Image 1: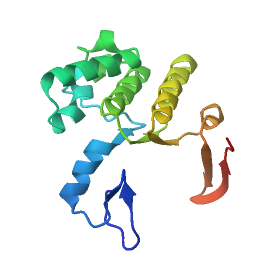
Image 2: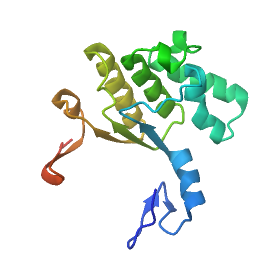
Image 3: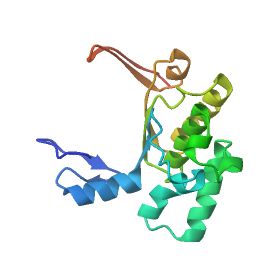
Length: 174
């Protein structure tokens, strides 16, 4: 969705997207895709609440709904008590949990997660994986990059890459 494909067909939630223009793809990304970045990508001039609220602001979500959804997302990751703090006032693990809340607040159909547990202690890592599992069980697709075999074991499908090459694929049989 960042580029136009050179061939083939692609549908997202029943919508054909391969012929869409850049603005239309951006709108769909905003509506359908959540991102958890390894480096957090929080905006330093915005407090925790405002960082999590930002995707909903771009969606033009009404203020009352934004407030409720941000509060729910921050509660999910145990960061509601820090909603007035700025990223520089948080530990790396706390910033990671805020980044997770920002991804969750939009209720994405697809969640792209780059090392979402990389800066977390084991208890918070397990909590985030639990949130991702719940999101998946409610119909979202989760694409997670991790180096931690404990968290990779939760996946329905794993693809191991070495030096840019796929070296192993596994799919769990239900």
